[in-house]
Amino acid sequence: AAALFGLVPAFRASRPDLAGVLRATGRTPGLGGGKLLRNGVVVAEVALSFVLLIGGGLMVRSFIELSRVNPGYDPSGVLTFSVGFRGGRSPEDVQPFQQQLADRLGALPGVASVTAVTPLPLDGQLFNSRWGKEDAVTDPTRFQQANVHVVRPGYFEVMRTRLVAGRVFTEADNRPDHLGVIIDRVMAQKAFPGESPIGKRVYIRTRAQEPEWLEVIGVVEHQRHEALAVEGREAIFLPENFFGPGIAGNWVVRMNCQEGQPCDPARLSSAARNVVAELDPKLPVSNVQPYQEMVDRAMTPTRFALVLIGVFAAVAAVLACVGLYGVLSTAVRQRTAEIGVRVAFGATRRSIFGLVVGDGMKLSAIGLGVGLVAAFWLTRAMTTMLIGVQPTDTVTYASILALFLIIAVLACVVPARRAAGLDPMNALRSD
Image 1 (cartoon, helix red, strand yellow):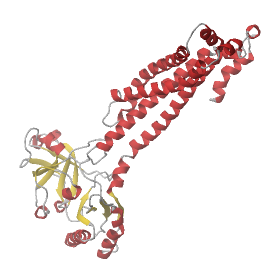
Image 2 (image 1 turned 180 degrees about the horizontal axis):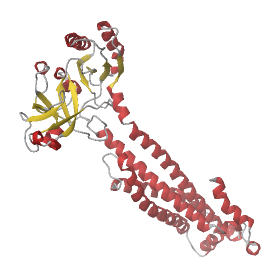
Image 3 (image 1 turned 180 degrees about the vertical axis):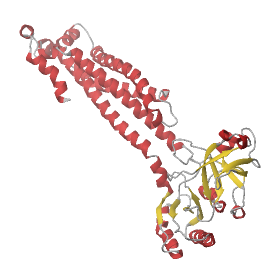
Image 4 (image 1 turned 90 degrees about the vertical axis):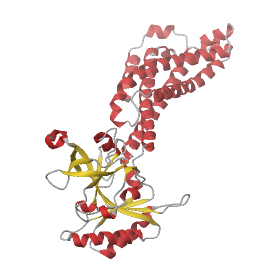
């Protein structure tokens, strides 16, 4: 950049117009040239910084919308961890172990409730199943995909996922021959629009090659499983023993948090590990963490983009402000004698102030006009990064436009005050 932008002044300095220099009576004749170039650079700075500020504003709006998203569960006050079973264990051994582990964890001080699930929302795992209605029996193209979650009874209560209709699983449902299924609100609206899905049947292929009919016993709020930024695919929930004990390996421990008191689930980490070790010291325990950390990581891409674009936008705005200030300061120095003549003929300090500010605002207006056109075009590339806001969001554009106008005025104030404060006699003698 230094070499590139040094070429133009170096070229002009190497080929001076001697007659023009000798005729010049001002003290800084070199300032008279390059006005168009300086103004063009300022316009470009204003336009580019405006585009970046628009991008930063859109990311701020997206982050606000993301923080307001209802994921379908409450991650606060929850500890999660995974327990991996060794091969060779029979279902007769696993089932009592699972129950003992749930009972021991539930007996820990400060624990309100315990459950297990596979996969856990936002854990990166994805289990799919094909589902359909009666028409899918004769036409396989009617099958659709859904996320499958294997849960222990009490899962929805521990995760605080709202029950929309019907009922949740009980211990009596946790058996291989139970043919009841819980679906989420998205699947209910897709499969049974405008009617109650309770008691209806869905054709699902999960544990066997051939699909089997399962009865909908409940509808719950949709859980954002794949990412917080998108609603994601519809979901099917089945009890753990529908597939076999031990399938639900991600444990969820909710603390009994009192309002207004600190509630750190991380302090249960050691106790949870000890409980597993007491039951079977050879079982691996992994991914021990507060569930809020997993949710925070899901927001990281949006937060990173916000910080990155925001930093560049701030630097660009400062550069545009400095550039605008520099051009106006140069113009004031060039027009010192002119300003002195204006004052001598009765121009007020307010009019001189307005003259300089007006010149600066003209450059800003041109730059903002170019920036508006560029922003409308370039921000479309951010569509996949935005959440709950359009690339042409009116509120963002209006806010950034007002902000930049304030920045432009502030950049104009100092040289304008200097021009308004010039002594006319000194100004006339300067040329």
